Image (cartoon, rainbow, N blue to C red):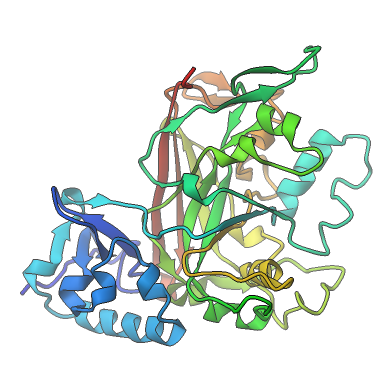
Length: 392
């Protein structure tokens, strides 16, 4: 039996206890949590079959009451001595995609980001926001199969693009590869087809949150997206962190959203719409170039989930919806390079180099921490990836 030591300022203390999936060398995958720098095998600690799985989906499907019960039990057990057989150093394990992604929707919930792109793409329009933006959470349906865990290399995508000087479209590797620093939210329980999830009951369905990097080929996207929206410019890859921080751990991080004016329609209206006090950081080849604040997001995760289901669409355990690029009012708070460099016209300094979009060999790391109880910080780990040359 061992007592797990954690530093008082660890972002992976008892107030966090995120969920993940790990494996040891030549062994199968199992569900886990993390305390300090120790990975705890949940199937070994709790002896429950839904943790002896290669994803969290079976556990999430048990529902909110079971999530509460399990978290309470874990905090009690991990505050005392723990069987040695359940414990592994973070350096000795491989972390995997924590969920089997059932479906995926990406939103566009930052007013700062949407306004900046509106000014960039429609400079003559006095209102940078589209007419629908403050009436509903704008989103698109993405591709679940290309969501990968942190540490997975990203191959530069190929596709059609048409520059301003091109007479006809050309095919080849994207020349304007970008990132989007976002938070993703994982659905744990379903709703029957034809029903909807009430905005005030979304907490019963949202299991946890991850860091999300929505890789974007801006030149492919610009040529294809009219009139139906993003497709190949987005579907080639998205990176998430391996740790799912449960929404139960994020209660102390809840903050009011910015004032929502005009008042949303009744299915989106909340007595107290909430966002999350999460500080994100974007590193480009080891240099921190942006610190997007999630607390500035206009639409709440609860409103996003309510909107997904308002037409009667069902959700399933493992469904993931992302927030869209997180940006704040300052230039160094912008969460996408197209926005940070103003479409490439204003390069940023990356270790002494003037850079605009992602080049082959670049490594992007997005990290995040949330406010916890009694001044604690809750870590999400990293969404990290290196870009490889295109397959021609």
